Length: 443
Image 1 (cartoon, rainbow, N blue to C red):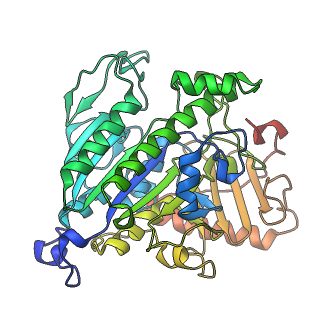
Image 2: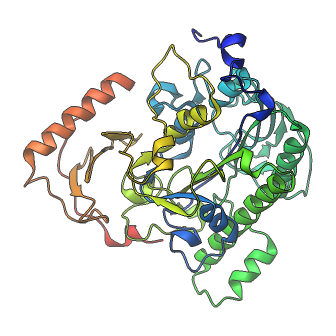
């Protein structure tokens, strides 16, 4: 590892005392639909705490995950880099990657993670090896919220752990346990600044909302049982977020704490998620696809006095941008021995007139598809062909414009291949894609 972060350089904070530095809470949902929050227009969902977080800060309307599935999305979120640079496919995060937790810990912060890791289960890939002082959660993709077993063929075992060791709390509802750990960590931090990562496996399967939340939706007249379970689980998540926000406020830390909330990708339609229940609004696609519904996610940032309240940003941005953003707000040095692909959103948070941080956004997926966004233009291509659309006129990606835009298509493919060679040593070709299936835009 070339970047060491010397103590002198990392603790020099423009003359500020360590106790005056901003705290950071990064909250991640799992399999949440593009518009599935009340403040995004989902009037059938009960999310008062996420709504109040948006009212106290900035809500993004064109925000993206770096991938349409869990593992690569989290690589980018925690490293600030395009995921092909840092992912060992099917295994997790490359051990020599530098996470936000390592950056903040080297800068004098206390660091903790409570929830779903899903970036590797070997000791050198573990949360503790990747910068977290404290970890309670699971390295698997999911687990039962009560038994804490991962009921999947070939695994089917207890997977809850604390700092690399099995942790037994049978019957304890996992979301409540994670919130308890988070509030205890905040209390124990005292005057020391902290970096807290809370990746909830909600509303990811198995969909296990609190009873009172399920009854709320069952008694609401909602007829779609998939939406009942999914909505109830999101309300459970919302309650968890509210309890963390209340803990911060009770300790007088609200104006000293940056809070970020986003989903790791779009909603699931998998059978094991009861066929889904999430919704992407007008957007085509879902989890595991590079259409808008698979990668466009809700995203909120708040810090009263530092981030404007009750505002909306339409500039396209992406999850890997949060690492350099957090670093700028907290004056934490970024690694200087490797490319950081994310761009700070500090200027965008401050002004709706700030330019977008990226000229182009790129995605590549395991199934051979790739996507690129350049301004209003979006290209999705893969083994079955290519699809070019104007998102401004056609946010649902219904009309293919490849025939009328051959030069634009060629230019976008060239730029994407240039990017892909740089980050993964790969290149792609293009063919036409079949027309969209209408039902894929809904739950």
